[in-house]
Length: 587
Image (tube, rainbow, N blue to C red; front, side, top):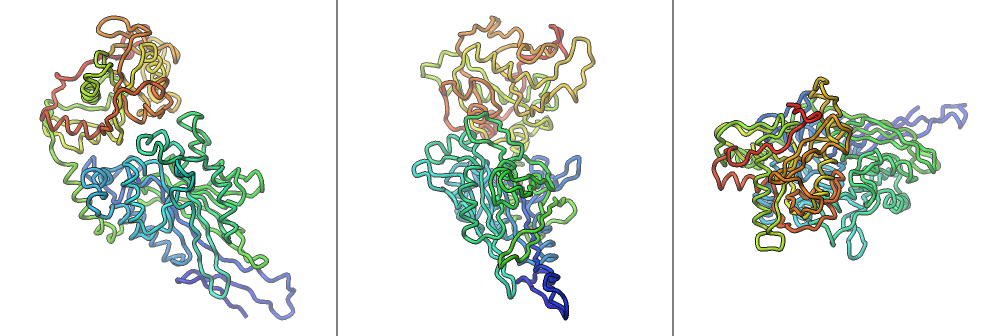
Protein backbone atom coordinates (compact mmCIF):
# COMPACT_ATOMS: atom_id res chain seq x y z
CA UNK A 1 0.00 0.00 0.00
CA UNK A 2 1.14 3.56 -0.54
CA UNK A 3 -0.27 7.03 -0.49
CA UNK A 4 1.11 10.48 -1.31
CA UNK A 5 1.32 14.01 0.00
CA UNK A 6 0.79 16.57 -2.72
CA UNK A 7 1.81 20.21 -2.70
CA UNK A 8 -0.89 22.50 -3.99
CA UNK A 9 -0.81 24.22 -7.39
CA UNK A 10 0.24 21.10 -9.23
CA UNK A 11 3.43 20.52 -7.26
CA UNK A 12 5.45 17.35 -7.56
CA UNK A 13 4.32 14.27 -5.70
CA UNK A 14 6.18 13.31 -2.56
CA UNK A 15 6.10 9.63 -1.67
CA UNK A 16 5.12 8.71 1.87
CA UNK A 17 5.79 5.08 2.77
CA UNK A 18 3.21 3.38 5.00
CA UNK A 19 3.97 0.48 7.29
CA UNK A 20 3.70 -2.91 5.67
CA UNK A 21 2.38 -5.80 7.76
CA UNK A 22 5.05 -6.96 10.15
CA UNK A 23 7.44 -4.11 9.40
CA UNK A 24 9.20 -2.39 12.28
CA UNK A 25 8.03 1.13 13.06
CA UNK A 26 11.60 2.42 12.74
CA UNK A 27 11.66 1.32 9.11
CA UNK A 28 9.10 3.94 8.08
CA UNK A 29 10.70 6.47 5.72
CA UNK A 30 10.57 10.10 6.82
CA UNK A 31 7.95 12.24 5.17
CA UNK A 32 9.88 14.44 2.76
CA UNK A 33 9.02 17.32 0.48
CA UNK A 34 11.15 19.13 -2.08
CA UNK A 35 10.83 22.81 -2.85
CA UNK A 36 12.72 25.00 -5.32
CA UNK A 37 13.84 28.60 -4.91
CA UNK A 38 14.95 30.62 -7.93
CA UNK A 39 16.93 33.85 -7.77
CA UNK A 40 18.08 36.57 -10.14
CA UNK A 41 20.24 39.56 -9.26
CA UNK A 42 21.83 42.66 -10.73
CA UNK A 43 19.38 42.88 -13.63
CA UNK A 44 20.43 46.56 -14.10
CA UNK A 45 17.60 47.56 -16.39
CA UNK A 46 17.97 44.66 -18.80
CA UNK A 47 14.39 43.78 -19.68
CA UNK A 48 15.14 42.39 -23.14
CA UNK A 49 18.15 40.74 -24.78
CA UNK A 50 19.21 44.05 -26.31
CA UNK A 51 22.32 46.22 -26.28
CA UNK A 52 21.10 49.81 -26.54
CA UNK A 53 24.64 51.11 -27.08
CA UNK A 54 25.25 48.81 -30.08
CA UNK A 55 21.65 49.03 -31.29
CA UNK A 56 21.60 45.26 -31.69
CA UNK A 57 20.81 42.03 -29.88
CA UNK A 58 23.12 41.60 -26.90
CA UNK A 59 26.19 39.41 -27.38
CA UNK A 60 29.58 39.05 -25.75
CA UNK A 61 32.65 36.86 -26.24
CA UNK A 62 31.05 34.06 -24.21
CA UNK A 63 27.73 34.48 -26.07
CA UNK A 64 25.80 35.30 -22.92
CA UNK A 65 22.27 36.63 -23.24
CA UNK A 66 20.62 39.14 -20.94
CA UNK A 67 17.22 40.30 -19.76
CA UNK A 68 14.10 39.49 -17.82
CA UNK A 69 12.41 38.08 -20.93
CA UNK A 70 14.99 35.27 -20.86
CA UNK A 71 14.60 34.86 -17.09
CA UNK A 72 10.83 34.62 -17.59
CA UNK A 73 11.12 31.68 -20.00
CA UNK A 74 13.43 29.81 -17.66
CA UNK A 75 11.23 30.49 -14.61
CA UNK A 76 8.15 29.27 -16.49
CA UNK A 77 9.93 26.06 -17.44
CA UNK A 78 10.97 25.37 -13.85
CA UNK A 79 7.50 26.14 -12.53
CA UNK A 80 6.03 23.74 -15.08
CA UNK A 81 8.57 21.06 -14.17
CA UNK A 82 8.44 21.39 -10.37
CA UNK A 83 4.91 22.76 -9.95
CA UNK A 84 4.18 26.45 -9.49
CA UNK A 85 3.20 25.98 -5.85
CA UNK A 86 6.46 24.17 -5.35
CA UNK A 87 8.62 27.17 -6.28
CA UNK A 88 9.51 30.69 -5.21
CA UNK A 89 11.30 33.47 -7.10
CA UNK A 90 13.44 36.25 -5.61
CA UNK A 91 15.85 38.96 -6.75
CA UNK A 92 18.85 40.34 -4.86
CA UNK A 93 18.92 43.90 -6.15
CA UNK A 94 20.29 46.49 -8.59
CA UNK A 95 17.29 46.73 -10.87
CA UNK A 96 16.68 50.45 -11.47
CA UNK A 97 19.94 51.57 -13.09
CA UNK A 98 22.19 50.31 -15.84
CA UNK A 99 20.59 50.70 -19.26
CA UNK A 100 19.07 53.59 -21.20
CA UNK A 101 15.70 51.94 -20.54
CA UNK A 102 16.10 52.65 -16.83
CA UNK A 103 17.51 56.11 -17.56
CA UNK A 104 14.63 57.06 -19.86
CA UNK A 105 11.97 56.33 -17.25
CA UNK A 106 13.95 58.02 -14.49
CA UNK A 107 15.04 61.17 -16.32
CA UNK A 108 13.41 61.68 -19.73
CA UNK A 109 9.86 60.56 -18.89
CA UNK A 110 10.20 60.00 -15.13
CA UNK A 111 7.54 57.75 -13.63
CA UNK A 112 7.28 60.21 -10.74
CA UNK A 113 5.73 62.71 -13.17
CA UNK A 114 3.92 60.52 -15.70
CA UNK A 115 2.67 57.89 -13.22
CA UNK A 116 3.47 55.32 -15.91
CA UNK A 117 4.47 51.90 -14.62
CA UNK A 118 8.25 51.51 -14.59
CA UNK A 119 9.33 48.88 -17.16
CA UNK A 120 11.14 46.87 -14.49
CA UNK A 121 8.04 46.80 -12.29
CA UNK A 122 5.91 45.86 -15.28
CA UNK A 123 8.17 42.95 -16.26
CA UNK A 124 8.79 41.67 -12.71
CA UNK A 125 5.09 41.79 -11.91
CA UNK A 126 4.30 39.81 -15.04
CA UNK A 127 6.92 37.18 -14.19
CA UNK A 128 5.57 36.90 -10.66
CA UNK A 129 8.44 37.58 -8.28
CA UNK A 130 7.75 36.67 -4.66
CA UNK A 131 10.07 39.35 -3.23
CA UNK A 132 12.91 41.58 -4.38
CA UNK A 133 15.69 43.16 -2.36
CA UNK A 134 17.09 46.67 -2.70
CA UNK A 135 20.49 47.04 -4.34
CA UNK A 136 22.70 50.10 -3.96
CA UNK A 137 21.82 51.31 -7.48
CA UNK A 138 18.14 51.52 -6.53
CA UNK A 139 19.03 54.81 -4.83
CA UNK A 140 20.79 56.42 -7.83
CA UNK A 141 17.78 58.39 -9.07
CA UNK A 142 16.61 59.54 -5.65
CA UNK A 143 14.12 58.37 -3.04
CA UNK A 144 10.96 59.65 -4.82
CA UNK A 145 11.59 57.48 -7.89
CA UNK A 146 12.49 54.50 -5.70
CA UNK A 147 9.32 55.04 -3.67
CA UNK A 148 7.19 55.14 -6.82
CA UNK A 149 8.72 51.89 -8.05
CA UNK A 150 8.21 50.18 -4.68
CA UNK A 151 4.50 51.09 -4.84
CA UNK A 152 4.22 49.75 -8.38
CA UNK A 153 5.79 46.41 -7.45
CA UNK A 154 3.36 43.63 -6.58
CA UNK A 155 6.16 41.78 -4.76
CA UNK A 156 7.39 43.18 -1.44
CA UNK A 157 10.62 45.18 -1.75
CA UNK A 158 12.94 44.27 1.12
CA UNK A 159 15.75 46.15 2.88
CA UNK A 160 15.97 45.41 6.59
CA UNK A 161 19.19 47.35 7.17
CA UNK A 162 18.00 50.56 5.46
CA UNK A 163 16.54 52.53 8.36
CA UNK A 164 15.18 56.02 8.92
CA UNK A 165 17.93 58.41 9.99
CA UNK A 166 15.41 60.08 12.28
CA UNK A 167 13.72 57.13 14.00
CA UNK A 168 16.06 54.19 13.36
CA UNK A 169 13.07 52.14 12.22
CA UNK A 170 13.17 50.11 8.98
CA UNK A 171 12.44 52.35 6.00
CA UNK A 172 11.48 49.34 3.87
CA UNK A 173 9.91 45.97 4.60
CA UNK A 174 12.53 43.85 6.40
CA UNK A 175 11.28 40.36 5.51
CA UNK A 176 8.44 38.29 4.16
CA UNK A 177 7.22 34.79 5.00
CA UNK A 178 5.79 32.77 2.12
CA UNK A 179 3.49 29.83 2.79
CA UNK A 180 3.54 26.68 0.64
CA UNK A 181 0.53 24.46 1.30
CA UNK A 182 1.00 20.72 1.56
CA UNK A 183 -2.20 18.72 1.15
CA UNK A 184 -3.11 16.97 4.35
CA UNK A 185 -0.05 18.34 6.13
CA UNK A 186 1.19 21.40 7.92
CA UNK A 187 2.19 24.14 5.40
CA UNK A 188 5.84 24.89 4.74
CA UNK A 189 6.76 28.45 5.67
CA UNK A 190 9.74 30.11 3.94
CA UNK A 191 11.10 33.29 5.53
CA UNK A 192 13.13 35.72 3.42
CA UNK A 193 15.21 38.55 4.92
CA UNK A 194 16.39 41.29 2.55
CA UNK A 195 19.66 43.17 3.12
CA UNK A 196 21.06 46.00 1.01
CA UNK A 197 24.53 47.47 0.78
CA UNK A 198 25.93 49.96 3.34
CA UNK A 199 27.90 51.65 0.56
CA UNK A 200 24.72 53.52 -0.43
CA UNK A 201 25.61 55.98 2.34
CA UNK A 202 28.73 56.92 0.35
CA UNK A 203 27.77 56.30 -3.26
CA UNK A 204 24.44 58.12 -3.07
CA UNK A 205 25.15 60.45 -0.20
CA UNK A 206 23.34 63.32 -1.93
CA UNK A 207 20.14 61.26 -2.10
CA UNK A 208 20.14 59.62 1.34
CA UNK A 209 22.17 61.79 3.72
CA UNK A 210 20.07 62.77 6.72
CA UNK A 211 17.23 60.54 5.51
CA UNK A 212 18.47 56.96 5.66
CA UNK A 213 21.16 55.01 7.46
CA UNK A 214 22.50 51.66 6.32
CA UNK A 215 23.33 49.20 9.08
CA UNK A 216 25.70 46.27 9.31
CA UNK A 217 24.40 43.20 7.44
CA UNK A 218 25.50 40.68 10.09
CA UNK A 219 24.07 42.63 13.03
CA UNK A 220 20.82 43.20 11.17
CA UNK A 221 20.50 39.53 10.28
CA UNK A 222 21.19 38.55 13.91
CA UNK A 223 18.28 40.77 14.91
CA UNK A 224 15.74 39.59 12.34
CA UNK A 225 16.49 35.88 11.74
CA UNK A 226 15.28 34.88 15.25
CA UNK A 227 12.13 36.94 14.65
CA UNK A 228 11.48 35.11 11.37
CA UNK A 229 12.11 31.74 13.05
CA UNK A 230 9.86 32.76 15.92
CA UNK A 231 7.05 33.41 13.47
CA UNK A 232 7.24 29.81 12.37
CA UNK A 233 9.52 29.82 9.35
CA UNK A 234 10.71 26.33 8.46
CA UNK A 235 13.26 27.63 5.94
CA UNK A 236 15.12 30.95 6.31
CA UNK A 237 16.76 32.61 3.35
CA UNK A 238 18.72 35.85 3.17
CA UNK A 239 18.69 37.82 -0.07
CA UNK A 240 21.71 40.10 0.21
CA UNK A 241 22.97 42.73 -2.17
CA UNK A 242 26.54 42.08 -1.08
CA UNK A 243 29.41 40.03 -2.46
CA UNK A 244 30.92 37.17 -0.50
CA UNK A 245 34.60 38.07 -0.04
CA UNK A 246 34.26 40.04 3.23
CA UNK A 247 36.03 43.08 1.77
CA UNK A 248 34.96 46.67 1.12
CA UNK A 249 35.85 49.14 -1.62
CA UNK A 250 35.44 52.05 0.77
CA UNK A 251 37.62 51.19 3.75
CA UNK A 252 36.43 50.69 7.32
CA UNK A 253 34.29 53.78 7.93
CA UNK A 254 31.11 51.87 7.09
CA UNK A 255 29.97 48.28 7.72
CA UNK A 256 31.49 45.64 5.44
CA UNK A 257 30.37 45.90 1.81
CA UNK A 258 30.69 42.27 0.68
CA UNK A 259 29.33 40.49 3.74
CA UNK A 260 27.21 37.67 2.28
CA UNK A 261 29.50 34.88 3.49
CA UNK A 262 29.92 36.61 6.85
CA UNK A 263 26.14 36.43 7.34
CA UNK A 264 26.27 32.72 6.56
CA UNK A 265 29.15 32.16 8.99
CA UNK A 266 28.01 34.34 11.88
CA UNK A 267 24.21 34.26 11.97
CA UNK A 268 22.63 31.03 13.27
CA UNK A 269 19.43 29.85 11.65
CA UNK A 270 20.10 30.78 8.01
CA UNK A 271 19.67 27.99 5.48
CA UNK A 272 20.88 29.83 2.37
CA UNK A 273 22.10 33.22 1.21
CA UNK A 274 21.06 34.38 -2.25
CA UNK A 275 23.46 37.20 -3.04
CA UNK A 276 24.47 39.67 -5.72
CA UNK A 277 26.43 42.91 -6.19
CA UNK A 278 29.72 41.31 -7.30
CA UNK A 279 28.35 40.16 -10.70
CA UNK A 280 29.95 36.72 -10.29
CA UNK A 281 28.58 33.35 -11.34
CA UNK A 282 28.57 31.26 -8.14
CA UNK A 283 26.53 28.09 -8.77
CA UNK A 284 27.00 26.67 -5.28
CA UNK A 285 29.17 27.46 -2.29
CA UNK A 286 28.90 26.12 1.25
CA UNK A 287 29.98 28.01 4.36
CA UNK A 288 30.02 26.51 7.86
CA UNK A 289 28.13 28.49 10.47
CA UNK A 290 30.46 29.09 13.41
CA UNK A 291 27.76 28.76 16.07
CA UNK A 292 25.84 25.72 14.83
CA UNK A 293 28.32 23.90 12.61
CA UNK A 294 25.59 23.66 9.96
CA UNK A 295 26.34 24.15 6.29
CA UNK A 296 24.86 27.32 4.77
CA UNK A 297 24.43 27.41 1.01
CA UNK A 298 25.36 30.50 -1.06
CA UNK A 299 24.68 31.20 -4.72
CA UNK A 300 25.00 34.22 -7.02
CA UNK A 301 23.50 34.36 -10.54
CA UNK A 302 26.04 36.57 -12.34
CA UNK A 303 24.49 39.79 -13.75
CA UNK A 304 21.95 41.29 -16.16
CA UNK A 305 19.83 38.13 -16.32
CA UNK A 306 22.66 36.04 -17.76
CA UNK A 307 22.06 33.34 -15.13
CA UNK A 308 19.29 32.13 -12.84
CA UNK A 309 20.17 30.52 -9.52
CA UNK A 310 18.10 27.42 -8.78
CA UNK A 311 18.17 26.09 -5.21
CA UNK A 312 16.55 22.79 -4.25
CA UNK A 313 15.64 22.06 -0.63
CA UNK A 314 14.56 18.72 0.81
CA UNK A 315 12.45 18.99 3.97
CA UNK A 316 11.59 16.17 6.30
CA UNK A 317 8.80 16.06 8.88
CA UNK A 318 10.46 15.64 12.27
CA UNK A 319 8.46 15.81 15.51
CA UNK A 320 5.68 17.65 13.75
CA UNK A 321 7.97 20.25 12.16
CA UNK A 322 9.48 20.62 8.70
CA UNK A 323 13.29 20.57 8.82
CA UNK A 324 15.75 21.14 5.98
CA UNK A 325 17.61 17.86 5.44
CA UNK A 326 19.23 18.56 2.10
CA UNK A 327 20.06 21.46 -0.20
CA UNK A 328 21.88 22.06 -3.44
CA UNK A 329 22.04 24.77 -6.07
CA UNK A 330 23.23 25.59 -9.54
CA UNK A 331 23.08 28.50 -11.96
CA UNK A 332 21.40 28.08 -15.34
CA UNK A 333 22.57 29.97 -18.44
CA UNK A 334 19.74 31.96 -19.97
CA UNK A 335 21.31 31.73 -23.42
CA UNK A 336 19.79 28.25 -23.58
CA UNK A 337 16.23 29.58 -23.88
CA UNK A 338 14.27 31.98 -26.05
CA UNK A 339 12.82 35.24 -24.80
CA UNK A 340 9.31 35.02 -23.40
CA UNK A 341 7.14 36.61 -26.11
CA UNK A 342 4.74 37.80 -23.39
CA UNK A 343 7.47 39.94 -21.80
CA UNK A 344 8.74 41.11 -25.19
CA UNK A 345 5.24 42.32 -26.10
CA UNK A 346 4.80 43.92 -22.69
CA UNK A 347 8.06 45.87 -23.07
CA UNK A 348 7.63 46.87 -26.72
CA UNK A 349 6.31 50.40 -26.29
CA UNK A 350 8.81 51.41 -23.61
CA UNK A 351 11.67 49.63 -25.40
CA UNK A 352 10.88 51.34 -28.71
CA UNK A 353 10.76 54.75 -27.03
CA UNK A 354 14.18 54.11 -25.50
CA UNK A 355 15.66 52.94 -28.81
CA UNK A 356 14.34 56.10 -30.46
CA UNK A 357 15.84 58.25 -27.73
CA UNK A 358 19.33 56.74 -27.79
CA UNK A 359 19.54 56.96 -31.58
CA UNK A 360 18.80 60.69 -31.74
CA UNK A 361 21.66 62.54 -33.47
CA UNK A 362 22.99 65.32 -31.23
CA UNK A 363 26.19 66.44 -33.00
CA UNK A 364 28.60 65.89 -35.89
CA UNK A 365 32.13 64.68 -35.17
CA UNK A 366 34.96 65.98 -37.36
CA UNK A 367 36.71 62.61 -37.13
CA UNK A 368 36.35 59.21 -35.53
CA UNK A 369 37.38 59.19 -31.86
CA UNK A 370 37.95 55.88 -30.10
CA UNK A 371 38.48 54.96 -26.46
CA UNK A 372 40.32 51.72 -27.27
CA UNK A 373 43.72 53.08 -26.20
CA UNK A 374 42.41 55.28 -23.37
CA UNK A 375 43.70 53.03 -20.55
CA UNK A 376 47.34 53.66 -21.52
CA UNK A 377 47.31 56.76 -23.76
CA UNK A 378 45.93 60.28 -23.47
CA UNK A 379 43.08 60.14 -26.01
CA UNK A 380 40.90 62.96 -27.36
CA UNK A 381 37.67 61.13 -26.53
CA UNK A 382 38.44 61.26 -22.80
CA UNK A 383 39.61 64.84 -23.18
CA UNK A 384 36.07 65.60 -24.33
CA UNK A 385 34.79 64.54 -20.90
CA UNK A 386 37.50 66.63 -19.25
CA UNK A 387 36.57 69.68 -21.35
CA UNK A 388 32.87 69.51 -20.43
CA UNK A 389 33.58 68.95 -16.73
CA UNK A 390 36.16 71.75 -16.58
CA UNK A 391 33.81 74.21 -18.26
CA UNK A 392 30.90 73.36 -15.97
CA UNK A 393 32.90 73.66 -12.75
CA UNK A 394 34.62 76.86 -13.94
CA UNK A 395 31.24 78.44 -14.59
CA UNK A 396 29.88 77.07 -11.32
CA UNK A 397 32.58 78.70 -9.16
CA UNK A 398 32.54 82.04 -11.01
CA UNK A 399 31.98 84.84 -8.54
CA UNK A 400 33.03 82.73 -5.56
CA UNK A 401 36.18 82.85 -3.43
CA UNK A 402 37.59 79.98 -5.51
CA UNK A 403 36.99 81.61 -8.90
CA UNK A 404 40.69 82.46 -9.39
CA UNK A 405 41.92 78.90 -8.82
CA UNK A 406 42.95 76.67 -11.73
CA UNK A 407 40.35 74.01 -12.53
CA UNK A 408 41.60 70.48 -13.14
CA UNK A 409 39.43 67.50 -14.07
CA UNK A 410 39.50 63.73 -13.63
CA UNK A 411 38.12 61.09 -15.98
CA UNK A 412 38.52 57.33 -16.23
CA UNK A 413 38.31 54.96 -19.22
CA UNK A 414 34.91 53.48 -18.39
CA UNK A 415 34.54 51.73 -21.75
CA UNK A 416 37.30 50.60 -24.11
CA UNK A 417 34.73 50.06 -26.86
CA UNK A 418 33.33 53.61 -26.88
CA UNK A 419 33.55 55.40 -30.23
CA UNK A 420 32.41 58.72 -31.67
CA UNK A 421 32.04 57.93 -35.37
CA UNK A 422 33.09 60.48 -37.96
CA UNK A 423 29.87 62.29 -38.80
CA UNK A 424 26.63 61.90 -36.82
CA UNK A 425 27.00 61.27 -33.09
CA UNK A 426 23.96 60.02 -31.17
CA UNK A 427 22.86 59.91 -27.57
CA UNK A 428 23.79 56.23 -27.76
CA UNK A 429 27.38 57.06 -28.71
CA UNK A 430 27.68 59.52 -25.82
CA UNK A 431 26.09 57.14 -23.32
CA UNK A 432 28.48 54.43 -24.49
CA UNK A 433 31.41 56.65 -23.49
CA UNK A 434 30.03 57.59 -20.06
CA UNK A 435 28.21 54.50 -18.83
CA UNK A 436 27.54 55.56 -15.22
CA UNK A 437 24.92 57.89 -13.78
CA UNK A 438 27.46 59.99 -11.90
CA UNK A 439 27.01 63.63 -10.93
CA UNK A 440 29.68 66.34 -11.04
CA UNK A 441 31.35 68.06 -8.10
CA UNK A 442 34.28 70.39 -7.61
CA UNK A 443 36.66 69.96 -4.68
CA UNK A 444 39.58 72.08 -3.49
CA UNK A 445 42.93 70.27 -3.30
CA UNK A 446 46.58 71.17 -2.81
CA UNK A 447 49.40 70.32 -5.18
CA UNK A 448 50.67 67.70 -2.73
CA UNK A 449 47.23 66.11 -2.58
CA UNK A 450 46.94 66.10 -6.37
CA UNK A 451 50.27 64.29 -6.60
CA UNK A 452 49.17 61.73 -3.99
CA UNK A 453 45.98 61.19 -5.97
CA UNK A 454 47.90 60.58 -9.18
CA UNK A 455 50.36 58.22 -7.47
CA UNK A 456 47.43 56.19 -6.15
CA UNK A 457 45.83 56.12 -9.59
CA UNK A 458 49.09 55.00 -11.23
CA UNK A 459 49.03 51.70 -9.30
CA UNK A 460 46.78 50.64 -12.20
CA UNK A 461 49.92 49.91 -14.25
CA UNK A 462 52.23 46.92 -13.92
CA UNK A 463 55.89 47.71 -13.26
CA UNK A 464 57.86 47.15 -16.47
CA UNK A 465 61.64 47.47 -16.67
CA UNK A 466 63.27 49.79 -19.22
CA UNK A 467 63.75 48.00 -22.53
CA UNK A 468 61.45 45.10 -21.64
CA UNK A 469 58.75 44.32 -24.20
CA UNK A 470 55.36 45.93 -23.59
CA UNK A 471 52.50 43.45 -23.31
CA UNK A 472 49.31 45.48 -23.52
CA UNK A 473 47.31 42.61 -22.01
CA UNK A 474 49.46 42.72 -18.86
CA UNK A 475 50.26 46.44 -18.72
CA UNK A 476 47.01 47.64 -17.13
CA UNK A 477 44.68 46.50 -14.32
CA UNK A 478 47.57 45.64 -11.99
CA UNK A 479 46.40 44.14 -8.72
CA UNK A 480 42.92 43.74 -10.14
CA UNK A 481 42.37 47.51 -10.43
CA UNK A 482 39.42 48.02 -12.80
CA UNK A 483 39.53 50.54 -15.65
CA UNK A 484 37.01 52.76 -13.86
CA UNK A 485 39.47 53.20 -11.00
CA UNK A 486 42.21 54.59 -13.25
CA UNK A 487 41.77 58.37 -13.14
CA UNK A 488 43.53 60.65 -15.61
CA UNK A 489 43.93 64.31 -14.75
CA UNK A 490 43.62 67.24 -17.14
CA UNK A 491 44.83 70.80 -16.56
CA UNK A 492 48.30 69.77 -15.40
CA UNK A 493 51.09 67.91 -17.21
CA UNK A 494 52.83 64.82 -15.89
CA UNK A 495 54.52 61.57 -16.80
CA UNK A 496 53.91 58.15 -15.26
CA UNK A 497 57.15 56.17 -14.97
CA UNK A 498 56.08 52.51 -15.04
CA UNK A 499 59.67 51.37 -14.46
CA UNK A 500 59.35 52.71 -10.93
CA UNK A 501 57.42 51.05 -8.08
CA UNK A 502 53.93 52.13 -7.05
CA UNK A 503 53.98 55.42 -5.14
CA UNK A 504 57.06 56.78 -6.97
CA UNK A 505 55.78 57.09 -10.51
CA UNK A 506 54.55 60.65 -11.06
CA UNK A 507 57.28 62.69 -12.73
CA UNK A 508 57.38 66.33 -13.82
CA UNK A 509 54.00 67.39 -12.43
CA UNK A 510 53.56 70.94 -13.68
CA UNK A 511 50.94 73.62 -14.29
CA UNK A 512 51.40 76.00 -17.22
CA UNK A 513 55.04 74.98 -17.54
CA UNK A 514 55.94 75.42 -13.87
CA UNK A 515 56.36 72.67 -11.27
CA UNK A 516 53.32 72.27 -9.07
CA UNK A 517 54.06 73.49 -5.54
CA UNK A 518 52.95 71.35 -2.60
CA UNK A 519 50.76 74.12 -1.21
CA UNK A 520 49.38 75.32 -4.54
CA UNK A 521 45.58 75.38 -4.61
CA UNK A 522 43.40 73.79 -7.30
CA UNK A 523 39.75 73.03 -7.87
CA UNK A 524 39.29 69.51 -9.23
CA UNK A 525 36.20 68.49 -11.22
CA UNK A 526 35.29 65.03 -9.97
CA UNK A 527 32.37 62.61 -10.06
CA UNK A 528 30.29 61.80 -7.00
CA UNK A 529 31.43 58.16 -6.87
CA UNK A 530 35.07 59.17 -6.57
CA UNK A 531 34.44 62.17 -4.30
CA UNK A 532 32.44 60.08 -1.86
CA UNK A 533 35.23 57.52 -1.44
CA UNK A 534 34.61 55.05 -4.25
CA UNK A 535 37.91 53.39 -5.16
CA UNK A 536 39.61 54.57 -1.97
CA UNK A 537 41.52 57.47 -3.57
CA UNK A 538 43.29 59.73 -1.05
CA UNK A 539 42.12 63.18 0.09
CA UNK A 540 39.08 63.63 -2.14
CA UNK A 541 36.40 62.54 0.32
CA UNK A 542 37.62 65.08 2.90
CA UNK A 543 38.48 67.87 0.46
CA UNK A 544 36.24 70.98 0.69
CA UNK A 545 33.41 70.80 -1.84
CA UNK A 546 33.17 74.07 -3.78
CA UNK A 547 30.73 73.00 -6.50
CA UNK A 548 27.83 70.54 -6.38
CA UNK A 549 24.90 71.42 -8.61
CA UNK A 550 23.77 67.79 -8.96
CA UNK A 551 24.49 67.86 -12.70
CA UNK A 552 24.55 64.38 -14.21
CA UNK A 553 27.77 64.09 -16.20
CA UNK A 554 26.39 61.94 -19.00
CA UNK A 555 23.50 64.33 -19.53
CA UNK A 556 25.93 67.26 -19.44
CA UNK A 557 27.95 65.61 -22.23
CA UNK A 558 24.78 65.14 -24.27
CA UNK A 559 23.64 68.73 -23.70
CA UNK A 560 27.10 70.14 -24.50
CA UNK A 561 27.23 68.20 -27.77
CA UNK A 562 23.69 69.31 -28.64
CA UNK A 563 24.51 72.96 -27.92
CA UNK A 564 27.74 73.06 -29.93
CA UNK A 565 26.56 70.73 -32.69
CA UNK A 566 30.15 69.84 -33.52
CA UNK A 567 32.76 67.64 -31.87
CA UNK A 568 36.15 68.88 -33.04
CA UNK A 569 39.22 67.53 -31.20
CA UNK A 570 41.12 70.69 -32.16
CA UNK A 571 39.00 72.54 -29.58
CA UNK A 572 39.57 70.22 -26.62
CA UNK A 573 42.24 67.54 -27.19
CA UNK A 574 45.43 68.11 -25.22
CA UNK A 575 48.01 65.39 -24.61
CA UNK A 576 49.09 66.31 -21.07
CA UNK A 577 50.21 62.93 -19.72
CA UNK A 578 52.11 59.90 -20.98
CA UNK A 579 53.72 56.67 -19.85
CA UNK A 580 57.52 56.64 -19.67
CA UNK A 581 60.37 54.42 -18.48
CA UNK A 582 63.33 56.37 -17.14
CA UNK A 583 62.11 59.35 -19.13
CA UNK A 584 61.71 57.44 -22.41
CA UNK A 585 58.13 57.45 -23.72
CA UNK A 586 56.55 53.99 -23.84
CA UNK A 587 54.47 54.85 -26.91
